[in-house]
Length: 64
Length: 311
Image (cartoon, rainbow over all chains, first blue to last red; front, side, top):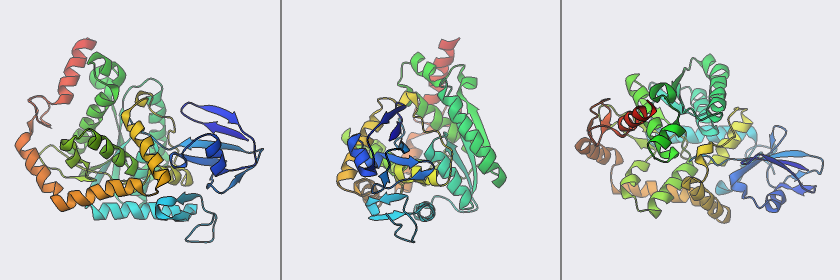
């Protein structure tokens, strides 16, 4: 699957299918600090992302 | 995962409430929480005129949208900081929201450009006066929001600070034992003195993640990009630490901040003690007349130094 990340902006490819919770683990990210978006839909941690899917992992933390 | 309120697919789990919501129920939940915050903290009434400080990010645009949906009389102010690239992109998001969402509701956007005031953008000003950019930015934004709210007779000024912002700020203040700042961490700060607008934070019950999810579900087109000046800021370190604690023990952030508010409420009346302190320590600035503890306020001193150096 193709994963789009921000801060800094980059794309990575990881093996699917995978549960969202496992995507977070593989990328060493804390779920509380991100949303996962496929198309225009938010995905919860128990949902599965197919190998051919493109998802965005969007950070939610802001502020200086 | 299913929504806990209806049969639809959930779009967000909320571990701190041990629940999950579909898009519609999340929207209802967030708006209800904001309405509860407004009432519980006596922020404003439907008759009051509210000025929202907007930046183009998720929190401020979401706050503007929610207040409009709840039927409040709300306008917005955007301060253009003159950060190359970033400011024009954030302004574009604000202007687009104003045109598509706010304008049809009769809600107005005001834009203040820092460069027109000082002849330089925020980064250049901070460099000239040898202050951290976030510090100079905070001084300018606080000053301009208060000035516009006061001069245009708004009853209250609202900012998009959320639970994560307030918990991180509280953690920072406690770690440094900055007790003088703790009193100003209330979601409602009174208009304690002539020249000071009342300030409120209606999103203090919501986490950043819940607000971001609301924005995505409701198609609020916000700037995802982080301010380049915030890189390495302490607040981001505190937020990450709190999120690690939250992952281990859901509800940590709300217990920390709301627990602080409970203790603050029991120990004294924030409104009366702040008013007393302000009335004994503040006087009109010799340049702009806004309240200050010094003869000339920090904003006017900063602008004077910046203008002298720019010329």
